[in-house]
Length: 338
DNA sequence: AACTCGCGCAACCGCCCGTCG
DNA sequence: ACGACGGGCGGTTGCGCGAGT
Image (cartoon, rainbow, N blue to C red; front, side):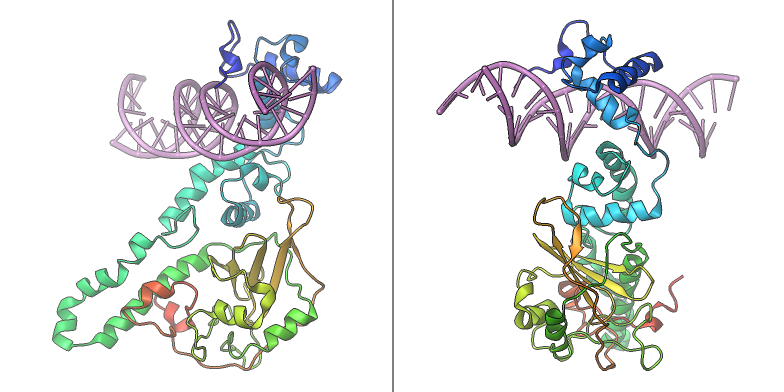
């Protein structure tokens, strides 16, 4: 490869002095940066062009926002990272005043650790399989004596459910997306969603409404397929690409429900209120453009409330395979979680 | 007060890609 | 078609600082 430009003889490296900063700012304000390679000589700087460019774009640019990341910015980064991965410049496009370098540093020093501590794989944003897959086994070991004495597999199942719920609760604590526009649906999509037979249902808190924080989200009890997204697939041709289902669960903006965010190459579906979806599509002009709702806002979609098992289909052997897509939760599960 | 250690962040490194002659 | 160049990007480094001992 080409040798770095800063290896050229006599060019300064390392931290910038206030005097150098001033020279660079003065020059760019007067003349613009033009050719970065030519700039250092013209500005009277003993630096390579690349160093000047980085200093300007990451630090001296007047529109740079300084200070701590707000919770909203943090959430935006998390959600965009779930979709875009380490595309820092693409993520920075959605955070005015923040540089890709700053976001990258924030991710590496804060957010990545946060995810790891919560048991998530920072790259996939999914629970780490190494821990999660061993959970039933660990619980079984811990309770072996008791289980042998009481022959209580039901008890073990309940304990497992609680552990799963705790993990889900951690995920729930993991703050919601705030910068996505939602919800908007076209009537065709609505009609198709309405035609789904019991694919999505909920217990309601006040008999009629679907606005309880931790309502059950997906009820797969009446589905042949264990995967609710398969049901969508069958009934909603436009969402065929969602065979790889949910990779994220969030509270929604108003703490009204849980969002299932499904990642796809050109579509993202938010399932926030039960049976209420936002289908977001990439703009046609730019692969890094914001995700936009595909249509005007519809009335909310509701289905009849159903009661469901605490964790539908959960047992000690299938627990690892259905996380998190089929998880059903009841508030009572969280009563003893501090 | 002196020292160690860990963290955060600015800066650098090197690869990649588009453009141009 | 090809190579040099300029700029962009993601990954990594290392310095400075503050907390802890």
